[in-house]
Each structure stands twice: as C-alpha cells, then as structure tokens.
Length: 244
Ligand code: PXP
Image (cartoon, rainbow, N blue to C red; front, top):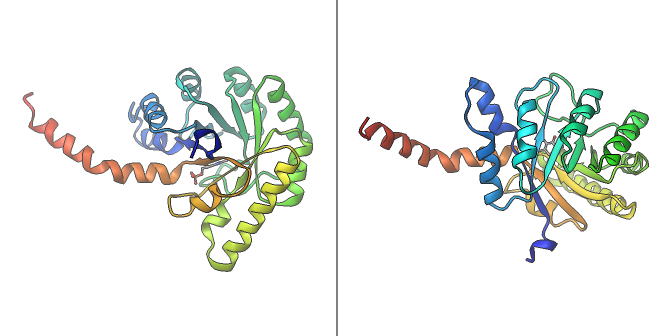
C-alpha cells in the first residue's frame, strides 16, 4: 500500500518511561526509544505529560521536541499548566485528554460538552501557535459535534470499549466508532483513534473509512518486552563472560 494512503501509526512511549521511573535509573533512554521507534517506521511519537509525572517528565518533552524527526503528539489535560508547557514546547500536535489523579490510564473520553468554554479557549490558544489540536472523545454524536464547535482540528476516538468487549457489544461499539468517524469527517475534522489496540484487534479499526492515525502504546511496549527479552538475556550472559 502506498505510504500516503496508509493509516498513520503514532507510537505512545509512556510505558517505556514507566520502567525508567520505577527505578529512577537513566535507562531505558528516551532518545534511544524514540530513534528505534522511528527507524521501525512509526509516523509519529506520542507522549502524555501527566499531572503526577508518573512516566514522562518535563525534560523528556523538551528532549523529544529536539530529537523527534517525524511528528510529536503531546497528550495533555486541559489545564493552564499544560497549556503553558505546550506553548513553550510547540509540538506539531496536542491531544487533549481527561485526567484524574488516580486513574490507571485515560479511562474515558473528554466531556467536551461539560467543559466547552475551557476546551474552546485552549484549542484556540494552541491553534494560534500553529499546533494541531485533537480531542480524545467517546464515539458519540453530541461529543463529536461539540468537538467541531470547540474549534479542534481533529478528534481521537476512544477505542477502549471496543477493545474490552466481545460479540454483539463489540459489534455495536464498532458501529458507533464508524458513525462517529463519518460524522467527524463530514464536519471537516481529522479522524484518529486509539486506546487498547493491539495486533489482534487493530486491523478492523485501521480499516475504518477516513481513519487518519492510530495512537498505540501499551501493547507495543508489552510486545517489545517479550520480543526483546531473549536478546537482552543473551547480551547479559555475554557481558558477564567478557574479559573485565
Ligand atoms: N490515545 C490516548 C489519547 C491515550 O491517552 C492513550 C493511553 O495513554 C493511547 C492513545 C494509547 O493507548 P494504549 O496504551 O492502550 O495503546
């Protein structure tokens, strides 16, 4: 398939940094992770600077802006602190996500209707700085309409429910995602999607008409661990056996 008609792959590297933060080491190195991801053909690098800084740190965001050769997508809560950081870093893309201190991950889409004024202001501040703004939302008709009204350039449709359900419930959710993608496209919004996608469930989502980009993190990092574990153990063995 020609590269320009393929759905773009944005790789979320948050959980590579979760491993670094768990031990407070300098490794795994963020710059190396970005370079490896880009060498493998990713179209963009995504990271979420969380309020609690549990994985990505402020310095990572600044480093990423300097070293990413593809495209940088900064996921962030709709706070003044994050707006100021985004306006200083100037990534190509910002995805506004809901954030609660104790959640394991982004648990649901942004309630655009409930926060319309704040999200409109934020979209306009970021948009004026040349950043393409995406809103991470449930595949819901009213929310898609509200995202367009808020002046976003894109929506990222939450695929978490699709990923977690089976059978009829999953088929119904897929219908909702398809309808939301159609509606968003007809309103002039770029259509992205993500959350909970892995090699076993991604093809159907990538096949949705007008899908522009998928953002995928956890399953890639999980695969990377198991695909790379054998080699890592081998290399430790040979380091132990080398002349000191
Ligand atoms: N898109 C958004 C907006 C997210 O918040 C996340 C999770 O950080 C992802 C995509 C990636 O989800 P996953 O890690 O389940 O692939």
